[in-house]
Length: 269
Image 1: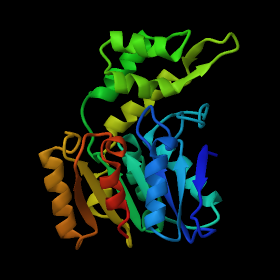
Image 2 (image 1 turned 180 degrees about the horizontal axis):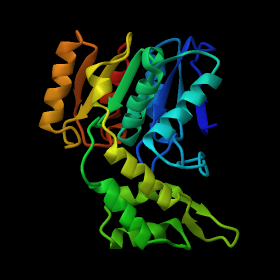
Image 3 (image 1 turned 60 degrees about the horizontal axis):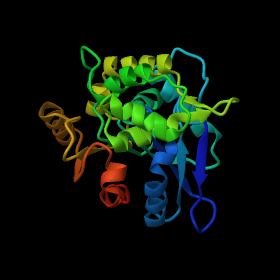
Image 4 (image 1 turned 90 degrees about the vertical axis):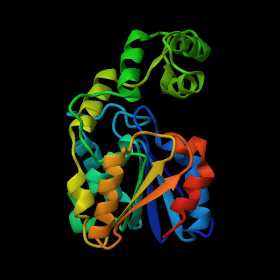
């Protein structure tokens, strides 16, 4: 079972759950503050912060490591919860995993999919900052005496300080007291290759019955290009509004850049 953290509503047991999933190299706790504020706004819902396979506390799952395998893990987790899942939230890599979950579940998919600055499109070759980070981490395998040493090493390889500090959350201390990367870089490469190879436009253009797909576009991010935006808007018209596009000010890491904007979007029902 995937590692996860449960946040129950103040009034007691939830009528339904909202699942929050993260981007590559992240963990469910990245969405802790946003999730807590959302369930305050959406009375009766609880939140589940999910660590996707080979992330956070979900290390060591058997391969192959693909978008579909990651989505099947979440389906298994959903079946163990004590209330239905009303909606799922997926940021970046997690967004494509949630679209795959909808494909797998079909008309049993949750009523709401919130896809945070993620694209359903495939691309011919892996590229972008997440792919570049993989090479950077291979060039800085550790061990390190301290977290500060790891951050300094990443900075020396061109990683911005805030990003280096965030990635350093993937360090763990070994028996000798030194720090090394907890994540399996080969598994990360498998997951990223699957991310780039997987096309999920079919889910967007023909959503499961009863399911609304909300795309949240970060205004200062290029993840959703003009062609993708036009295709999402066309899907919205063709499905009678069951595919929607929301713009939120900020960069790709919207949960850090503009949590208020994300909360305002997710508080909608």
